[in-house]
Amino acid sequence: MKRPAPIPDLSAPSRRKRALSEEERALWESVAKHVKPLRKKPSAAKAHAPASEPVTHHVAAKPAPVKPAAPVKTAPAPRPPIPPLAPIGRRERAKLSRGRQEIDARLDLHGMTQTRAHRVLFAFLQRAHHDGLTFVLVITGKGKAGSPDTERGVLRRQVPEWLSLPEFRSLVVGFEEAHVGHGGEGALYVRVRRAR
Image (cartoon, rainbow, N blue to C red; front, side):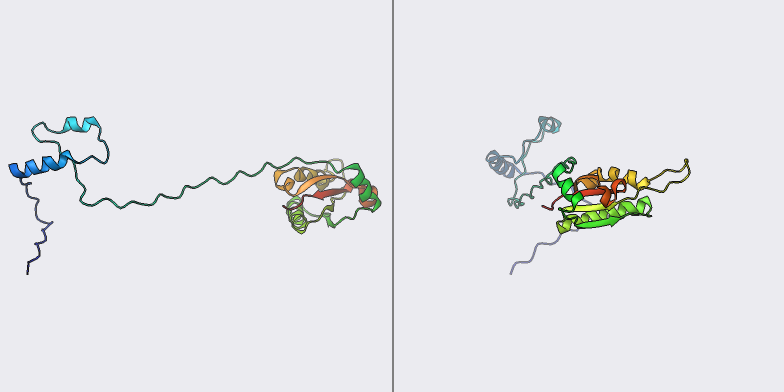
């Protein structure tokens, strides 16, 4: 039974490398002639090698395991541009004002702060979009008549601006001032965009 080779003590100071014998050197050169390098090394590396020692190539004992190529990550498809707002057609507006076209839902923003009104309006339109509603009525109110210094009808002015924002345009096709019977200047007919 053969004895296992002794394990070298790595903690001991390293010994000088043994020089190759003439027979080993001849064997090595014959093997090296038939080996192709894995990668071409730049010629600058050869220039740094001392002239007295022959340039040797490393021979891999085992071929390196081939790693599977990592899957290529594709960039997510860009979102389609948000379409511009379109006015509600004359026919549809006439049908709404005469009651021939049903208003699917109503939202009254009277007395709300701008922050709360914005949040409530967005949630209302998301629900209407999700539920497949077509026309909704948003009541902003005309604003209270106060002193000349105070601003009148903040929501009446703000809601159309909000509906023009990209976050709302993905939910809204268009909007127009409502007929007097539905609130006139203090309300808007809003056409909801269909869910795809």
